[in-house]
Image (tube, rainbow, N blue to C red; front, side):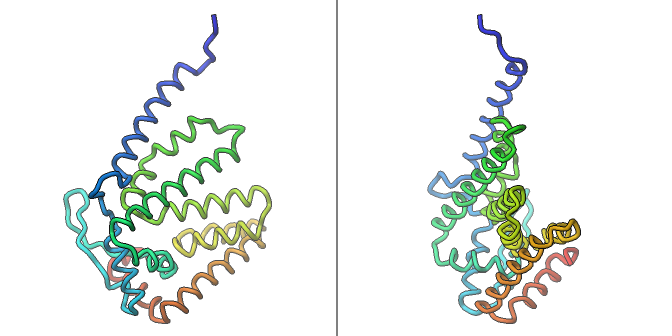
Length: 237
């Protein structure tokens, strides 16, 4: 009679529970109905359309209900995010929701699988299921946020650092910082740790994306962004 390996009795129920959580998260977050939850997409589209029309993209706001309370929702992502929102805003709402949701899912799944493969000495299929079952994944997809894209850049930067691809890693890290500036601590710490080629590449990548944003959306886009941050979330600066 076959002997069940140690830990199997706990791994199987854990895998089944995680699979149920993933299925539930997919049903809630993915646009599987004719009227999917829009999340932040309406304000994202309005922001992108304002940028394309030469108006202030950070003056756009929309009422948003979270946990039963009405708030004012406006994107505070920096100008490089407009490089994604502007072309996305050419789509209608339903198509944009589909694109954002499925793109986020693809980026997140690919990143998790790639990270698990890189750490295959310790990672298991249960590790992948656990990562996919977290609320961070389902909420990112549900609200049509850009964090899937950021996670992809971060994962790529980490994986490239592991194989000593210093410049390529820096480019990916710089792209992540361009979308989420609070990640700028990472290249700063890499510089102090002696990873100067990676830090310089991240800086060059960050400067290039910001220069492109400046060229496309005009010199007023950065003061407008900072004004919006001071107005809506002064604690962030």
